[in-house]
Every structure is written in C-alpha cells, then in structure tokens.
Amino acid sequence: MDTKKTIAGVAVALALIGAGCSTPAGAPSDGDGGSATTSDAAPMKYKDFAAGITLYYPADWKQEKNPNGNGVVFLAKAGADGLQSNVGFTKQDLSAFPPVTLDQYTGIIKDDTMKRLKNANILTTDKTMLGGMEAGVMTYTAEYPEKSDKPMKIRNTYVLKDKNAYILTYTATEDTFDMYLEDAKAIEASFEFNEPIN
Image 1 (cartoon, rainbow, N blue to C red):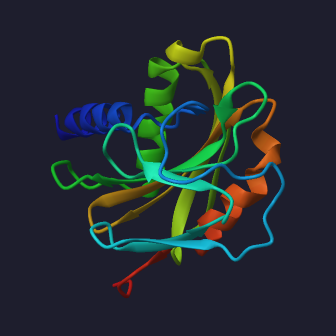
Image 2 (cartoon, rainbow, N blue to C red):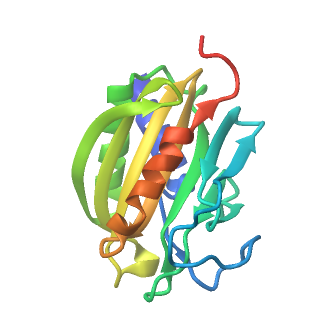
C-alpha cells in the first residue's frame, strides 16, 4: 500500500534527519564562541542555493554543517550543562512517495516521534506560516539515547512545497528551551524561498 510506503519512507528520512539533537559544547564548529547574551549585531544571512531558501540567524550563533550531512545547524552558546540549544534546517525530498497533505505529514512525524524516541510526549501541534506558506509546528519532549540524563524539548516547524519538506528544528533541554525560543521564532519568521511560490 502506498500510504505504508510513505509512512515508512518519511519515518526513515526523519530518523536520518535526527529530528533535533543538541550538540555537545566540545563539538567542532566553523565560528568562534559567542556570548550568553543576545547580540545587538545585525543577523547573519544564510542562503542555501541547492535548497532554494534564505534565512537569518543571530550574529552570536555559530553555523555548521549538520552532523548527518543533510542541512545546517545554527548553535547558540553552550549552557552550563554542556549542551548547545540550536536550530537546524533540513530539506527532505518526498518525490519518491505519494503526495501527502500538511495534516497527513504531521500525523506521520507525530507517530514516528512517539515510536522512535524514549518517553516522547507531544505537547502541541499547531499551524503557522513559513516562507509565505501554511506550515505545521509540533512541539514535544523526549529523551535521546546519547543524552538520556537530559530531557530535550523540540519545536519542529515544517512546510511542504514541490514534493519537498522544509524543516526547521529548534532543540534545547527542557530547562533552557524558553531561553532561545524567541531567537528560534525569529529564524522561522526570516525563512523565505528564493523563487516565487507557484
């Protein structure tokens, strides 16, 4: 059945994306350390020509390639717990699967999150705008195997366009989630497609 193929394919792709993992403070990065306070400097521009998107991130955050090789991660300064809150961007190719609506995609990632992550708890599923299009937002808590002592809180914001899912994932510990939430929302608000929406 095509729906089962879609669910399995999207679940595997989400597993590869990581659906949000905080980065250890000692991880290599392309920039120098930022400060714990919000910078007054103008936001930095990130343009991904292959994905066809542009967004802006805080000047005191560091940009590095996603460890799984798909997309990019913007890192806030490491907290006392040694973990860095971050926003990741990934483009997921859905062309091999039957078309899905935004609500169907939300259901797929919700089911995958509950099955794949330990002690996952979906807090909210909402809708917003991303790149001028209707987008889904799913916020949840979970424990990651490599960080089982630190419950994580994740905000996935995603839009479907031209047989692709464009995903922004804000990840932090439950204790630090609110600290950078407004920065994460500002990154979402700055997200735009480089070509006109058809």
